[in-house]
Length: 115
Image (cartoon, rainbow, N blue to C red):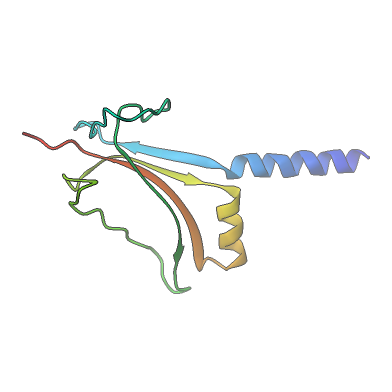
């Protein structure tokens, strides 16, 4: 009975530590405002762009590049805040496919245009 408790405690610890979020912020700029935003989290009042997708990579690829361009959602083409989230589901998908498919959850806020 004690072995099952230790096993469950170890398994729950692994699950809890596998889900994390990393946020990078530029200190020399202002985030793009969104006065119509009704968020109550860290991004309150900011225009947030969210990407939730699965990337397909070759086994020989070491990295992947996603380009942020000047468009309607990001007029400056520069990033002020980036948040990368890793979940247990993303880790399991990557492990099952031997790293060929990776689940990506990214939030980013563009920098405000300078006048």
